[in-house]
Amino acid sequence: MAGHTTTVQRLERQLQLEHARALSALHERYTALCAELFPAARARGYAGVDPVEAVRSLVSDPPALAEVGRAAADLWLTFFGCFRDDEAAYEAKQFRERADPLNRRLAQRQPGAAPDGPTTLALLDALDTFVDERHAAVSARIDALLAEIAKAQGEVRKATLGAAHGSDELARVEGSLDQALTEVGAPAAAGASALEKLAVLVARLREDAAGARVRADHAAHQLARLVGVLRGESDLGDLPPEVLGVLAEIRRLAQARSELERANRELYAKQAESEGGRRELVELLAAAERRLRGLGDADEERGEDRRLELYRRFAAAVEAGQDWKSALEKVRSLERVLTLDHAAQQRLVKVADRQLASLAQTLAELRAIQPITDDPRRLRPRWFGGDYDFRSLNGILRPLAAAAADLAQYGERARWAAGVQALAKHVPKLRAVFRELVKLVAAWRAKLGDPPPASLSISIDPGSGLLALPAILAADLDLLLKRRKAASAALELAPLIDAGVGLYHQAVTDAKGAAPTRVPAPKRESAAAAVARLAGELTALAGMLETSFSEAASDDFRLLPPDAALLSDDHLLRLGLSQLDTVLAELAAAPGAPTSKAATPARGDPQALRMALQERADWLELLTRYRIETPPGA
Image 1 (spheres, rainbow, N blue to C red):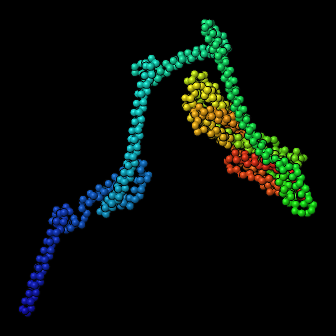
Image 2 (cartoon, helix red, strand yellow; image 1 turned 135 degrees about the vertical axis):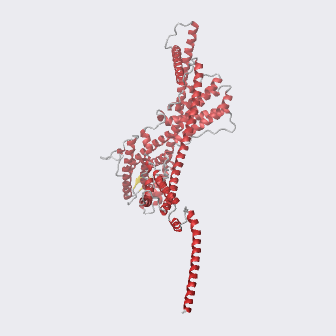
Image 3 (tube, rainbow, N blue to C red; image 1 turned 90 degrees about the horizontal axis):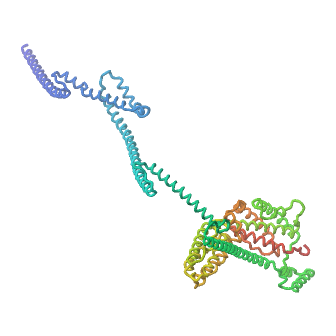
């Protein structure tokens, strides 16, 4: 029993020792935890010695975090309170919509309590994003405002510079006004404004102008009186006898000079007109000669015997049933004969009749624009037959040729209108050139002691003056060359007149559509001979223009509405040309018909169109002189 007791005691002592060691280890661990706990708790602001309170201080939120939460909430409210009233409808609304979850979390806290840690962090994160966006928007507005301010400052600087310039100009104006007032002898009062100075100057100028007007009226009256005395329209008055004698001589001299100038101008005008008429007659004679040459009868060249012999051979070949075609070709070489059977003639009559109706309608439209020719209804009478036989080929060729001649007249008028337009483009340059030439001739005549030239009395402003002046200027040049000292004048005038004649020649070429022939200059030509040659060319060119365009001179080379309409509606002339070409193609294919080499004119060329219409008219006129026969047995 005693052994059991000893064992139990030993076990109890061992248990006590183990418990003591465990308590000692637990105490050491407790002491180590406290050594670690209290520094951490004191770092959080705990100053006690109770471990449990130290642990509670570590688990609960620190006071600084509560202050940060309150500061974050205040900053949140401050951010949304910084929007202006005009931003509440757009910018503030966008931010509030994005911050609505955080606002609901803030509304759930107790009154006066600070937000918890997660809410504080969310507020700070959102504020970071919102502040950056708000700062960027405000910076953009500030940049825009700075740009507008810079622009406004630039405008202010410009206005300042303009004001400074205006001040300088005003100062110069005032200086000019002071100088002008000093020159007119009416200085302004001290301290007067520019407007007052200007008023004084204007008043003085009006006073001077009124005095000058009175003196001018008096001088004009005296001059008119002198002119009236010289012209014999008023009495001489009470003047000394020697003055009366001088005035009488001056009157007789002026009358004689005016009569000579008038006679001289009339002679020059007649000379230019005669030259132009002569050239026109030469052209008409040349055209008539060409037509006569084309219409000449070949029988006169070969003789009556040759023609009768060919007739006999043709008749014998027909009677004997031999080949009569070769004999017929020889007869055709001597006579203008178209050999067509009845069916071919009727077909050509139908073609010609149809085209004649179209031509009459085209001519009616042209005549509605400008009545140049007779009424085209004569070519297609509605009742009876008129002057033409429309049932035979010979008969219908006559109104067809008359229609072609009418179209040629309209083509000539259209070419004339185009020439007037071309001449009108040269008129300003021609007036300037001839004014200078007249001044030069007058200056040289004054140097040589001659009276003013007759060309100086011609007004070049009207169109008639422009046509008459070149011929009169040419006569003045001829008179100038007869002076002894004309060589020096010719040396100066020759190149200038050559340039003027070249321009005049170009104007005539453009107006008439054909270049007039110029007299070639010799290799060794003196200046006087060159001036004489150029004067002759000037007279010839003036005659051409006077003959062709005197009608347009009365309107200063401006086309009247009918001529302008005719020129603009040239499609009617081209339509008539195509209608003529249709019937000419059929007629030219007939055996024995004359050869037609008429070309088609280019568009926009009135001269080529006129020539084409005239060629068609001449060809049809020639065809009307042909005799149409039906071959035997047809």
